[in-house]
Amino acid sequence: MKIYELDDPFFCRYGRVFGGIENSVQEILNALNDTPLPEHTAYTAEDPKLQNLAACAVIRDHCFGGMPVQLGWCNGHNTKLNCLEYHRCSEFNLGTEDFILMLARMEEIRDGKLDTSKVRAFRVPKGTLVEVYATTLHYAPCHTDSEKGFKVLVALSQGTNTDKPDIKHDGGDDALLWARNKWLLAHPESDEAKQGAYPGLTGINLDLDRD
Image (cartoon, rainbow, N blue to C red):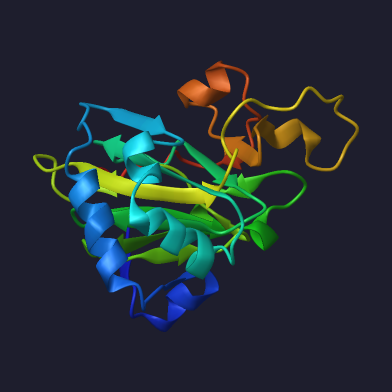
């Protein structure tokens, strides 16, 4: 599987490098270093230590235009795609080590399904703040070094990835709604699909160790 770099013009379809707040980036990196590194993958939607940083207000104002935000993390070790999700807002990521994002575009969904051959992989250098557009499908990062794993900031509109609203499936994207502001397409082999997530990914479950 080809791994693209962020300076490749191809990346502009999926996101962008976000600059101008370097001092805040360093403060977040320092705090991320103190978060756990599990053997597999763990996610915390909102971490009080990150939320209480001065950098949180900077992310709120400069990245989200003053809208309420949550700063959490996704840490661990991973090489598989498993799922793709999207939100009704951009997501901002920042890692203490290089990591890889596997991405696709909402417009590539056909009849509620997305073929994993449409997925592209991008290497994000450590210390680089990236904006993943709301129209970009994404999921858990992948590590580039199994010994180092990854510790990645996940900045989103506040409340995202928390309890799903209790709604009746009336069409549209309703069947994909997996949590608040989180629409999910799962690969049938994934744990999420076994837990009832919508099996919206077709093709192979991409694995960077294999593919």
